[in-house]
Length: 216
Image (cartoon, rainbow, N blue to C red; front, side, top):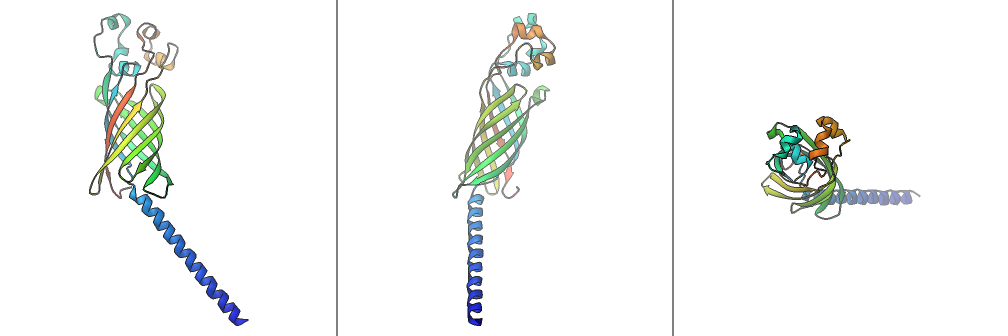
């Protein structure tokens, strides 16, 4: 009986040791795969090109003109603006290889060089590989309303320094009408009836980030 108990305890000990080693090895393997892909949370600086539409009108101060002065307006129908903000990210999937799934949150403020405060917020779902390439897409909320953003990125590495470079595209969509909240904000129904741009205009943003490896 004593020999049976001793044998049982030895088998249990070996089994527990095997399970612990297997669990540790599995954890290390998954962590190694995750560590192959850099975390790129951090500040973002960029420039946006905005096509013809209501967003460009606001940035060009067309909304401050009355219909008579706008009739002689010869300024640009599109515009450019700077972007400044921050990106946060969370990993939600490990494929077992050098690619991970990501959820990213990006908050930006545009128009500061024009004396305007135009915030936007995007949440994106995508993937990133260990060679620095990524793709993500998701909803975008800004002063022109709710839209959708498509983003491509590449991470340039120099030692422990990461410089994520991204290009994002928000398609053109139908904008506010004369009875919208924006009409009340601009306090001129005649403006929307006479010189309105029903489309918001597409947006293309090129941004660069800054991140040190191991800082997240």
